[in-house]
Length: 413
Image (cartoon, rainbow, N blue to C red):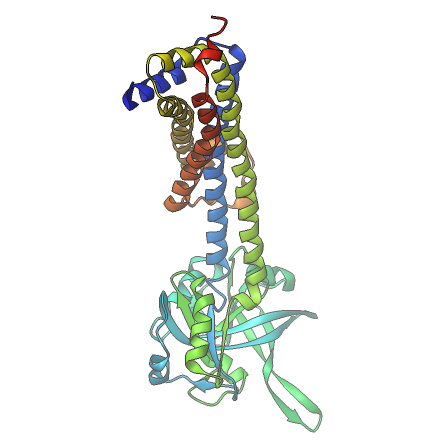
């Protein structure tokens, strides 16, 4: 009997409705586990990807992703020639001058720490830095942020802490730019008017303070044509981590290169760890279901001892028996993985509608609902992992079936 006969019989066994009811129950339980496990892993992974993507946009879209500053002086030349001389990095979208400093804002007797960002809307590539601010502007007008106007954009959380609105004045005190007087060190400070409130819906809102670069340079008392640093933007902010090491080697010790990881690395590490742990726990569902196939096949082999022995007496080789039961086990894995794939993609694509029908409260997610980002390579990995676990679970029962001794199995027949 050839290979085609073994495959045919394996498929027939997988569809057979007779035999032990308990064996059929275990087989169906394993099949359902694979379907549910694959679907759940696709849905949960897509939601976790969506949350990570939102963190990238809402935090890394408004904080410096990668900055180059002088190691010896307070500022660096902001000429176009200097910026163009900086190395081009993989995934780079733009590099623009920036004036920045740690600082404190004061309003009504309240003090809050902030990260002062002075941006220049007229330079090449400036649209990259203004786009997220314009997109998440809640109140005010971003166009009022002009040189000499001494206006600022602040985060919504910071505005709530200070209890201020557009049109109110706040005092900005910068850590850099102080001067020594007979009374001691006097920090750089000035009154600014709030022209807009931005809601990034992330922890960046609590320290976000943006002004025109010229106003920031005057506040920090920087000489003309100098800025604090040059700021890189990337297609994927995670590229800034590897780019920082390369750029530091290229520029040498005269410059300091700093990526977003120094400030927000722990947050994204925690998100990544959570993704891995959730994936591991849901992957165990698939593993348990796949290895339930071992129990189902072993019981089936026990029930089919006589049939196996008869097939061997008719000329089927051990390899044929092995392939027959291997095919039966893989049938559950393939069909279960495909059904899980279909269910997972459909559910992930319509997750917010399904949760709304189930009357699940999604008010904490905002108007857009749960973020969902399906990554094809991740989905393919999940399906292939389910098939691999099914294959591994099938190997031992198929081998045991191929070791059946016809004389012993037919002794009492």
